[in-house]
Length: 71
Image (tube, rainbow, N blue to C red; front, side, top):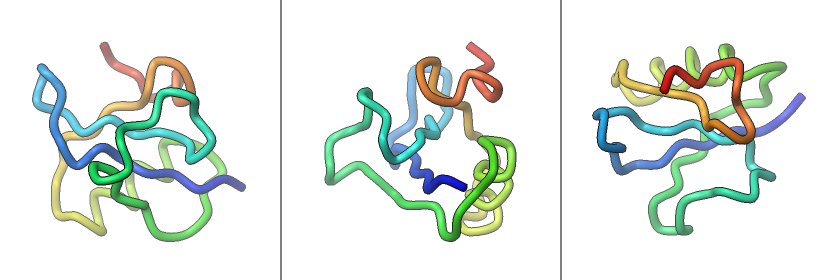
């Protein structure tokens, strides 16, 4: 189980990028929003982020959450 976070700023496609908390490509500290709980995969983390934030526009990091990366 891992902890995840997302960038509070949107990328050029309008998505909030989701990262494993140990990713080497994390946003700066002030732009990090931790997703509550521990998750077995990025899909679970994104579902939790949607519930937690009320937002629907999330994308997995190319480097640490490739299964959820859409481009």
